[in-house]
Length: 180
Image 1 (cartoon, helix red, strand yellow):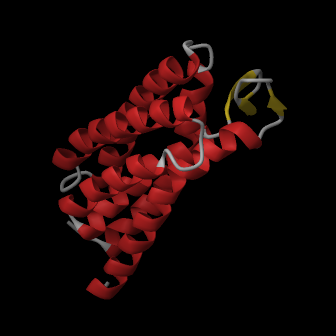
Image 2 (cartoon, helix red, strand yellow; image 1 turned 120 degrees about the vertical axis):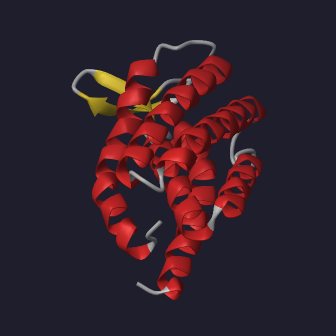
Image 3 (tube, helix red, strand yellow; image 1 turned 30 degrees about the vertical axis):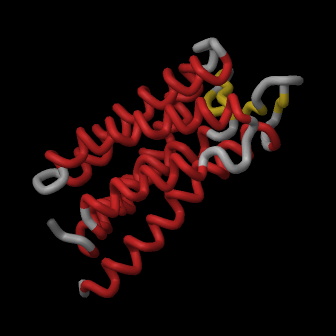
């Protein structure tokens, strides 16, 4: 595949990535099957397991950042992390924005640290391993800062893991668009 397709895929992933965090922050207060007064809106992620609704987009963000780095390079990957962190404060209350920004920055840097050395040899493994590390870091930091509790940790981890699993076939196609 040509470099034009690689660039288009990378730019699309960049835009989707930096938009995913403000979307997640907005969803936490507005989308869910249950919305607790003064608390997050929740969605079911498994039988008997709920998570704040932003989990639906954050899991995808972890994979999208990997796609940005694969298609556009390290500098674009780091720029995406910084842009996403900055945008996280636009659509949420200050406490939620701080929690989201801190969790986003640290989890994406953890994702970056795991993904970077693995991606040249084992792309699917790199995406899965880095996303799993990132989603745990994101969940612990976000829940602790935003709600002072890890009550929804299991739901957060499961919800984000679903997004990673759904993305695996797309990552396999990415190897054709952006070979190492």
